[in-house]
Amino acid sequence: MIVSYNLEAVGDTLIIVTANSFDKEVKYIRQKNVSCIMIAENDQIVGWNIFEASHHITNLKGNGQIELSPSQITELNLVVKEAGFATEFVVDNDPKFVVGYVHTSVDHEDSDHLTVNDIEIDNAQHVQIVCGASNMKAGLKVVVAKVGAMMPDGLIIWPGELRGVKSDGMVCSAKELGLKDAPKEKGILELDDSYVVGSKFVLPEK
Image 1: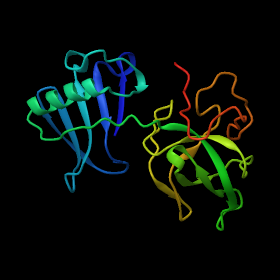
Image 2: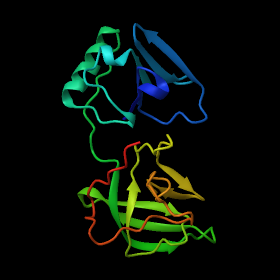
Image 3: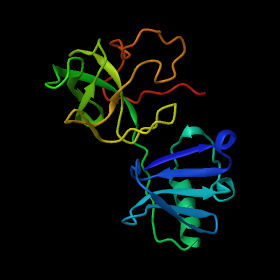
Image 4: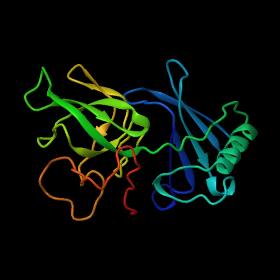
């Protein structure tokens, strides 16, 4: 579940994305201040819009992807229920940007510039990520945008494939993370040894 709120850019609307609807025709059902977004062909729910959100959810602040507290989730469930929908949301505040450690990095069999990487993230999990950065190599500490992350430019990270190889996440550059003084040269951000593998990487405030 990806939750975003940006009063200046979007207005007083809480946006919730629950599934990838890229290249799909969608339909909307609005009841009171709640709009349910579904894929037209199979009614799969892919998102929600909560209008006049700050009137229903207290202390609602943000400038992009946000984390909802347990009490805010309770308020969200109440407004959705009062609008006549049966969906119930649960808290998901696992960090979406974490420090990763590249255990292995091998050339993609069907590319002259991509690598397939085994990266350890939080909770000792390992993910496979395909990356095109020229400075990717084993032994690096890097910033991983996990599946479910929203990048500063609004891009959402979904599970995918690159040239037939599964890729679950993205290894980020300083520019992609919105860091000040990001180098003009292309390449992923290399972290020093002071960063702890699996720890949350905090993005700069806009």
